[in-house]
Length: 293
Image 1 (cartoon, rainbow, N blue to C red):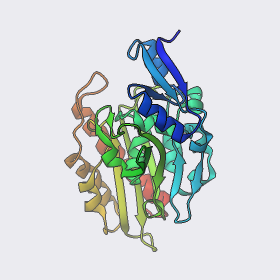
Image 2 (cartoon, one colour):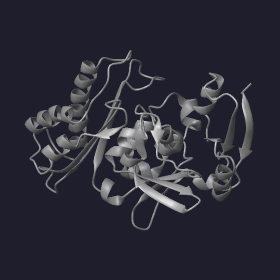
Image 3 (cartoon, rainbow, N blue to C red):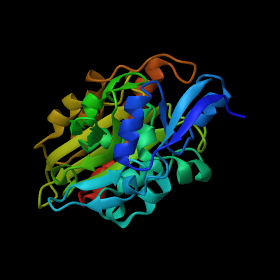
């Protein structure tokens, strides 16, 4: 049994917003893969819940007129991995969320729940940061959009304001056009485990595949929130593709990350993993983009 005070079923996005205003202390529940577990642990005992799981308008992946990829917040991890738009343009995101939990979790867990939890270890978070994702929130004053880097405030805390709910994740065309990426999750086990460190890299090469036009690298569990290593990005931009650049790029990520000691891994070990995974992900991204190393 789950210890809850009340459960409200939203009939539409506007209804969910109204319910949030009427019941400001209530928690949003989608797939429930996190919320229900926390309730069973007694962490949310006696809460009110607003279920948005029945809102099909928040499911699916679509391509907007300007090329923006729109991912509804209730889109499951399994759906994202299999979606043809994701596979064509940002397959690395599908690969990243395919490493969340097991099949049951991926079938019910949602991209919105994964980001709204605000945890740095979320498998979607580093790739979304690396693609300059925009978070769409709908509330009493209408639709608000903000860069995902501003959405994460601190560990476990995101910028969802009174009456709001997240309705979509947006990837601008400029962020994914002609880019190829790779995600590496380091964990103690190969499956059903939280990331000790997550690394997502994507690159855009010149037409002749000899020069790095742009590179993005983002980490999970390298700080209290997911973050980009912008020093490394700036170092590689405009440089010829080479192993020397690969090594310099991977070493430069240490300038912007600040992993912590925990029972999962020591800080120094996480720094070592960050450098090595950035190196491997960069190499793989360059190869996917048609470059040679």
